[in-house]
Image 1 (tube, rainbow, N blue to C red):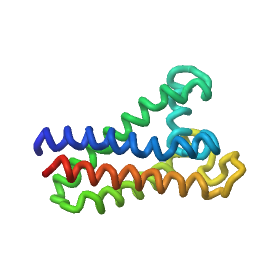
Image 2 (image 1 turned 90 degrees about the horizontal axis):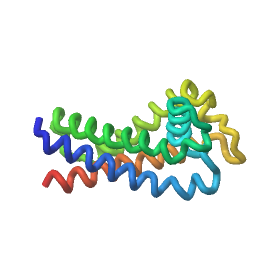
Image 3 (image 1 turned 180 degrees about the horizontal axis):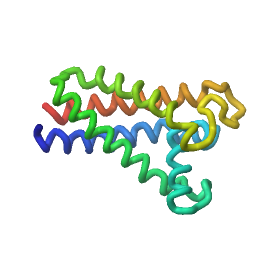
Length: 151
């Protein structure tokens, strides 16, 4: 496997995380941390790891958010390279859906809250839908930019 391709995966993973975060910021401003499942998880982990309050862990939790996005990009590049997948955009959308379902599985063990019973004044499926759309933004952006860098 070419190192440069994995490096492109890292770069596009971080770029896709940035696009995903830009999409999520207005949602977070309107409904708070419980509306963004992965932010809630990262904030909880950061709070426990650094012994800070959950409110003081938002900015440091973006290190985890970026780390996950970068590693996801490397993993994505490795998979599409190994299986010789050429439609990166479709593969990225599949990855986005997969990441959403993984997130649903790990949310309660990390945060103690069910992803469908968040303390919000919104539809109980709202955070799930937000996560799905957010991860589709990540996956599609990842696939698009990896296809451009691989030309």
